[in-house]
Length: 200
Image (cartoon, rainbow, N blue to C red):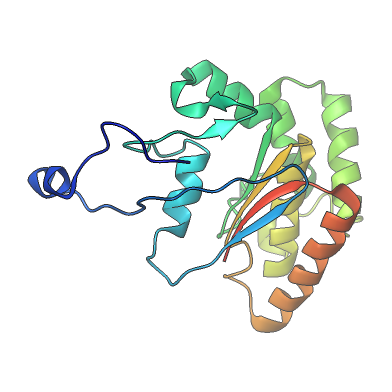
């Protein structure tokens, strides 16, 4: 992202009673690279990742993906990008409580329109990848926090995203499980070699 032309000034923010959450941010992430964004609570890290993915709209600048400005993308183009190029792991898992592990992992493929056979095959591959084989029929309430986060990771990888966004994915876990999940993340990256933006 880069700030350019017609950016709101401090006076504009004050007049509208807005608070500038993220300002003057500019960086490049190359294919296969891991970018880690660190900061204190409330410093705008999650706001930044939500702006990059266009879950929140920035007030100025540009977000370039493969040379195309995402701020100029239509809603339909954004949906396609999120379905095919982006995967996201949220801080608080974001699992659907009424769906099993298999159904949660297959959900983005269902939204994409994949056949039941294809989405279940892919979901089983991702479940195996994150070490939850044998728990396909469990519901989120039957899993530990670390297992729930593994389901979230598997779900985000099911669509085979080019870019993997992780928004403080381990912050809700206890220290021992957090360490285990950090090791798991490094193992997955050694296998998958994704482009990653990691908030912590």
